[in-house]
Image (cartoon, rainbow, N blue to C red; front, side, top):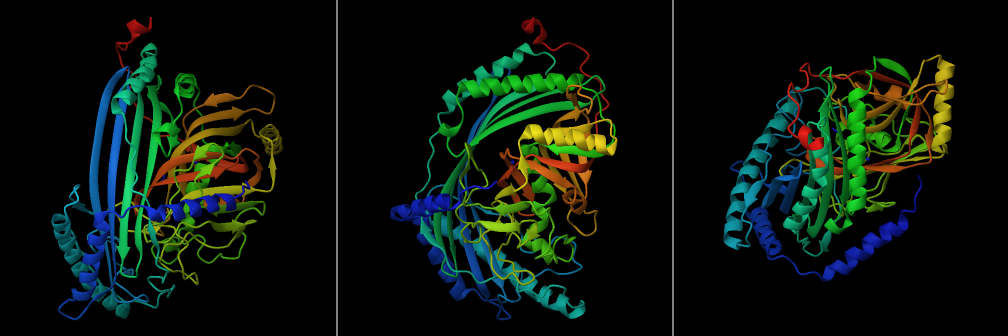
Length: 568
């Protein structure tokens, strides 16, 4: 991709209180190592032409990953890995104009100028070996930044005046926070035993050709220092239990279902009963899809159920209000000049709040304390009663917005840019879902359509924001129903993708349900993969367009599955 009004302030207070308590945590010894190397580099680094860095940041990411997977009662993966990665962020020039400035006409990639990619560090706390790696990485990044500053200055002399003359980097207050070093011991043998038992259920389903139950988790600790005085130590953890099953229809279409549970701790994942129930749902849905009829291209009224709606807003809205896209001349800039204008129906507001840890019973994977530029994650009202108020901002200013709102994010080894955290859609025109469905039926009759569509779940999607391509999106449904106006039962169908353009889709939203729900996932963009969450109620859309899904042409396997005899 590239998942309502609530009381936020008590949760903000909780986050702040936890941060205050954690100040007593022990500092990791490498925090001082990073500081001393940063001081030395800022004092001594100078290019032959006199160029010096005006900003330098070291980010150390210590990550432990666990992946355990079982299929048909057998373990197919059981691995644990640990790594330390160093990101060196060097800027030459000044806050107004620096080495990160876009070189117009250079299509090699605006983020590739300084050899992005993290540096592997020793996973033991060896100061000398760590300093050596920092020294080499800093030298390479500084030389690349100094070279590029010269290219930036030359480019400005031969190009027309820029549309957006905003500064390249914002001035922000330094952040100082020393939290505890996070540790989450994992009993891999016990987890593997549970997964074997869960996955055993699929041995009774010979028409399901592939299946797995997977546990994945990461424990991440960060040490960050920069030349402005920021000094951070903080950690987080995320865990997921996923259930996947796939089959092939007689016409060759590959069909699958996936359900997952997410939590900040292993203990936060559900016990046996909810997982067993989810497995039965996945099996029933995959087998039902195998027998479901295909849908032809269609344009008409539809409901996107809450989680599906959260993915929908992420794709068609969230990426287009990322701040760096508003001044990049290669971007479509859908909303760049629409601040203060109505871009959504007046009953909708959109907030991104990375400080929010939970929504209802769900942990929000898009939560973080500080972004990757040392700015605290902040609740940001993006759209208020349909009116665009601001953008998701990193430290790259744009069109009169000069400061970050804590949304500069990246995967380690990638450059920072503005990204979503917890994107929350709120509505003042909401009705119970039964009434929302009744309104869909009314709209189907009004438009003279044979049926409407109900998108129960969506797996993800992608969107094009570059100016050279169509300003369009595609969203991938995995559970879709026809809703008939004559009282016939809803009919499961398959083989459709949602397509469209954002401005048209926004204008077609008629009403919402009163049923906000959570989508947790990972989003990929220029700055890599980052965990995100979406919260949205169900939405009724006056018109949505679907096209045929691409499908394979191979027939199902010729011989019966080996588990067929056991299933009997």
